[in-house]
Length: 143
Image (cartoon, rainbow, N blue to C red; front, side):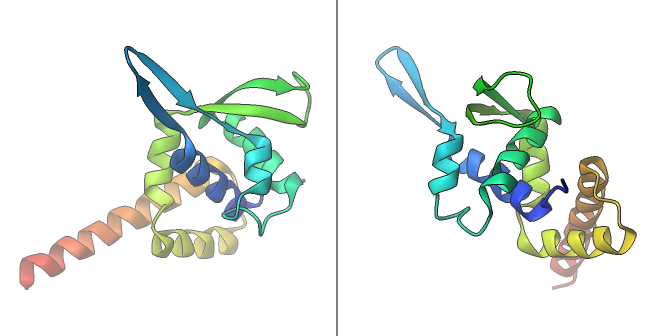
């Protein structure tokens, strides 16, 4: 099965936007995200369930997210799970690809090279984001 990189990005951003911590006196309560939430969400409705599940699995394998209550354990698929956190690595990748202009340029380059590894996608997105920042700074300096 191929990774749907648009779905992978959308799942990661969904996790970041929907995981939450609520203070309850001296105790913190985490509002987790489960796989079923993603299947039902408006933000991810354009993706097939198998693409969402596979994206969660690959984000976990790449250490971008942490999950618990994984069913079945140690399988090549997930019937159910709870996303309990986005790692710092996941946040860094999300920050790089959250801007749609950076993401679209990244996808264009990745498709031309035909390299869809997550590491390559991350490196390309990072380089595009850096170049965009350089251009923005040079425009601000000369204005």
